[in-house]
Image (cartoon, rainbow, N blue to C red):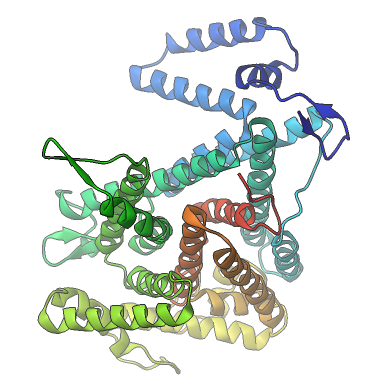
Length: 513
């Protein structure tokens, strides 16, 4: 028996098959007529399609049905297909379609059950506050359409976070298995990253040809996945790599205890713990994702990965002084590897070449060469963002309106906008002014504070997830110094990660399994 905290009624816990039947039909008895009609419709369409199109239709139909049964299924599909957005055309790409379907199914479940409920979460107010400030900045913006598109991303992140918290809470109430729902969410996040990493590794090492400007080392092509650009591709893979690394670190003490208890039986090692399988799976996903980040040849992704990993090492031990020692040891090993040549010279030169040309100030009149072109282009766009902020200091030129406003602030040698300032903080300062930037920094301060609190309270693999989330936030905020990652449906991943954080926080959700 479970008690409903919304209606006060006592509900019996249904078995899984009966619960799904009730959700789908709204009745206790089987009603086959709608399924027969759907089967006839799909069958008729299949006869007119090629095998590939028929398979795609069947898969999409299955996802739609599963989403109607459980809205989280649509979110999982959105996480998997979201990175395809840059390669698809049309009003809605696959990720947005499945996300919209998931949100509509969530709303429909609430209406049918007379349960329109917004979960109480730590970040909801701050997310709404920043979105509200951003919306106010659009009032006098040059383009409402650009502003609306950017606002929609943040509304989606808020909605995804609430969807995750609400549906996982309901999942636990029905099946007493919150942990399994979290595992499924992690599996979807890892599957999305793994698929992109494998594609990127193929593009780097095996692809016979590629974009000429992606050519590196004379024979390889920078990995770009389905993002069509290596930088956001590398930033996206950092989510999987750093999150996986945090979880894997949480398994190491337990794995070490298992190693100490190994026994010989007939001269063969036998392992009697189920912990090896998830640890092995997470380790493989993490390793492949790290290779994908390297293959992106993105300095921003490398830098953010390094900083995120450093923070993981700092917070991994329970005692801070141990983390500091571990971080110092890692730094010594890294410097030693560079000195003895374990780290390829091409990698170190890739990083140092950026810092040589990086400087602040007016870049008008600078000599442009093939070597410094990319750096000067970024600096020119930074300068344009600062000029926007000087003219509109409090609320900026309008959220999402950097590109429409760029022509009025472009330097003479850089007339074409890159879409954003390639520094999200300067970009935000130009678009939303001082007020918007402060609201954004307040939001992320709260995100970091909540994550560190969870790390201090949690144990086992949950602490590893929280540790990985902290690394993700650090990697994201670091990468935003040289780029903008709220592109190509990456914000769907962020919304799901925000929801995951709320579930792990025992002050905003029941944490015990």
